[in-house]
Length: 167
Image 1: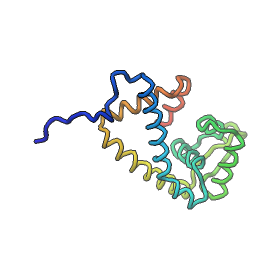
Image 2: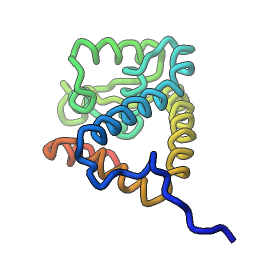
Image 3: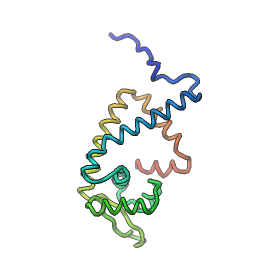
Image 4: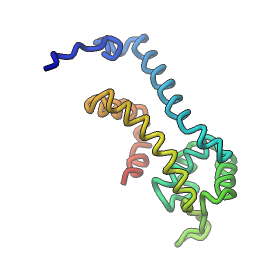
């Protein structure tokens, strides 16, 4: 029978967790963790001649088929010009299709093609593998705390829009 686990001082927050060293450690871990997570899909994207902006678009279109270009623009917080280039690349490669809105023909509704779904699934599986391993290592309680911290970084006025993705 294993004895009680001893807290790892490198993984346990100081009671003074709002001091500069703790804030800097959080920033560094967030930066490097996200950097390594996104790098895990870079090779698969490169094979397609795509980058991270393309991946973000694929991800959110997969999460919400029928998303409008305007809604995607708001989610990604990039310029219209950048989004136009990204969507043009994805459409040219047969990964995304755009069609007019049902009620407003000026709207452009986005949906992944079968090829787009296949690529997004491959990319998601790679991210899921990395994130699942990190979640398992940290434990269930830490996952909820991690989500709470990340949600705390999102401005209140954006939380409802982001929460809609999960529905």
